[in-house]
Length: 197
Ligand code: MN
Image 1 (cartoon, rainbow, N blue to C red):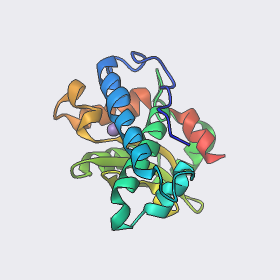
Image 2: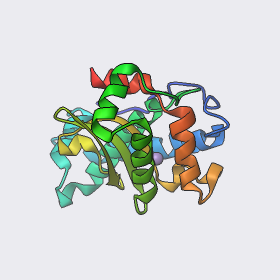
Image 3: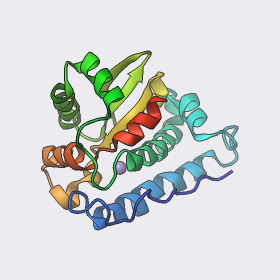
Image 4: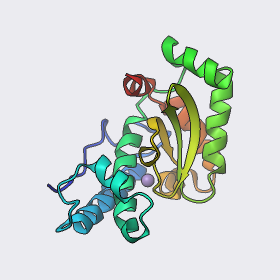
């Protein structure tokens, strides 16, 4: 069964002025779409053809001979998760239940924001920063290129794409400004809540 590009969960201009419609037009319509097209071409006629996306990621992770399949499957998954990690008029304080978990894990909401921003800023080159659950603990991590917590037994709760294609049209080299806008104005805490259930 071929994978298809999911619709964005909001109109293309919904995240303006923080992320422009033009960025989403390329990022969703071209980049995300290309990963899905590549994945479909790569799995066609292989034993993985009828597997679901998470299984393809888990079964190809760490296998150098299947790097192309892993990269395109992981990027397909990561991008869908990223679209939902944002919403119009997001950001602000997390709901009480999550705030409590964040206080326990990071020592306060400001500390969490600092750690998340630091991970996203210092990811060298292309990659992602994440809030994940590992066992019962919350953690902030970063991954390179296509790599994803799904491949490492961690439960993703939230992600930000820090590949240049995610912010270059709007922010050029100012990655930290994009990350701050994401945390303060776009972060979708309802999605984090859903992922904790
Ligand atoms: Mn991307």
